Image (cartoon, rainbow, N blue to C red):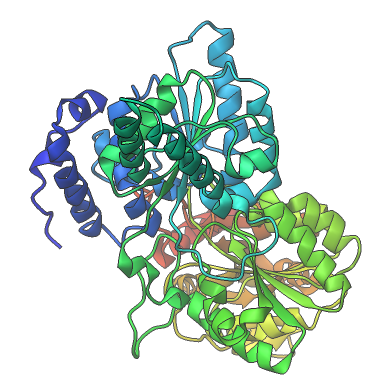
Length: 598
């Protein structure tokens, strides 16, 4: 798609450019930003679309980067990137590495504001932007309680409520109540008083009504915060598609000289809400009709089948993105899906309680989930031997620190079993296998995007699928072969490509897929010992992964040569892709060096 004409956006490279625009130009700028994002690679995330007017207002009110913005969800930042001159997606945004997970962003922002106050920078503000679902997490309320006790901090919390989150609300989903009913009662009472005030009462009542359409007066306490006795100022709900209203609310919050919560209610583009069953965060919505399926759609269909066969299977949603894996399951079994928003730790512990009551929860989340709820998974599910399945879709986001690292999980979560399916058939089979485990937590890791064709094994070796190998590898008589390639998850096509290239060079190759990577099959170390070289090929270069597990196993088997490690680069758009050619050339070079030393 050609780049659209964006004359207003082309003149914006920072806050000073934003403040130079006339208010009447802002709706046009918002439209240009949406056109630019729609013409970019993939499909713009629904949250990016919902944050366009907010991004414009933030840069008109605050002096970024002196007034830092801390984002609870990196998918909200694309409008901000465009407004600061970053037109191309060439890598992770420099703002993002500092940003903690959504539920803890308020704590981080409070610490930053405290540092500014102690250093005497009383003119600096910190703006924390979170999705409304983040307030379902206990850590968020701990941070709000702390802010209520430190009124001297200059911090503005923007709660972006896109109201586009289907699923059954679970206890703790408090964001919906923020600043709604209490405000209406107080404003109604105020209007009655003002109407009976001589001379100025009528005009003031009218002004209050007008303000109520966009910016709400800072009333303390109100709504949910009043219920919890938190002495925090609130503003909103503000129409998040009204730039003027959002800007007015932010200016009032900035001038309050205390912590203020501003709630913006908005809606992402309509296309983001359609067919959530095939939606994958950060990827295009899959069109209806025949064609390749996405990994999440395969999982969603199999969950419905599992639900029919096993009435004790339930779905638990535990992330602040659209619940693609459980969308179809929720339509068929609406009473068997529970939505915990961004309360990841709570969701993990609650799922363990559900398992203790005879259910088998399937917790659908992004790949960083286990990094945020590791203690709950280890203590509540693993040590108590409860059958809970965690279905984790790889985010590929630079701000997610691989929480599903097999090497770490094998040490920190006793009894846990982790599978990485290579294709749709294996995903279906491994899901049913996981649902049959009732005495330990199980993890299914699968990527985003479209699933390729099924890859059948040419042989089976004590629970390990052999995907490629000569007669010696498949027969009864075994001999030392050149290279063992261990394919992890969806990297099988790349591994098979490398094997074919090596075979043309006279290198004997065996390609295997263990399927279940935690615990690592003992036979894998034996296979590695039967080859001159071994290599692992994985889907995330941020993880120690199967290479670390195999190295540990080989050390116990007294095999001196550690495996080579190949991994797909994640979070760097300009990084070289991992191809079969790269793997084959690297292995051939290493094999040549090793033979030269003999």
